[in-house]
Length: 287
Ligand code: SF4
Ligand code: SF4
Ligand code: SF4
Image: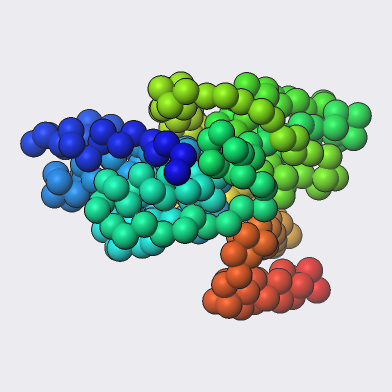
């Protein structure tokens, strides 16, 4: 078996609640983690510590790793659903929570012989085809894409996790995924995951700040922007029906792409039904 990650977390519990659950981005308010009993918070933190922090949503938690960690601990959700984490992460969570080991969820990428995890990839923009629409920027949970309107965009490969979330919003399909080879020590992987978690939270806070700045309201919002809008009980200040339909269609398209991506990894009749309903709703909106 390939080495599991952070196995020490099970034995390092104290009487203190995890400090990093205080002042989380507003997107996580509904989890109310800081109100849970301290031992439960510690278990969630230990599980979250071993998740890859790509925030890809392939575990069926579109808001990322922390909500999945919370669901595993508080709702008894299966601990083998993290696709990029693969078998090492599933085994580590089973060890932390003393659960029966399960086979990891399959990935469309082949397994890396050294890490035992699915092959890592990085996104690359075919820059001569990029139309500079900026739609990929808010989709990136770790702010790895740079560019401005009507100008070519580029991805900072060192920051990219290969989560694939920028692919769906790109209207011209000019983003490719390239396999990469890395030989990471466990310590380096842990540092990287901590940095990715911080970058994601910074991203969420910045989006919330932008949304609270009414002069910054945009006609098309990303999924995370829409969710943060709901969390802050703000409404988008638009008056034209066409603009409303544009927003609704953008949300539907984003949900559809996510469901299509999830279904390509794991069949799920309920999600398939949800997908066809969303497609019908989008078609009706277009009509
Ligand atoms: S599938 Fe993606 S979002 Fe879910 S726990 Fe794994 S890395 Fe995080
Ligand atoms: S650039 Fe794309 S694939 Fe890379 S982290 Fe950002 S959204 Fe994910
Ligand atoms: S979504 Fe695609 S076309 Fe638009 S800026 Fe990003 S890479 Fe370029």
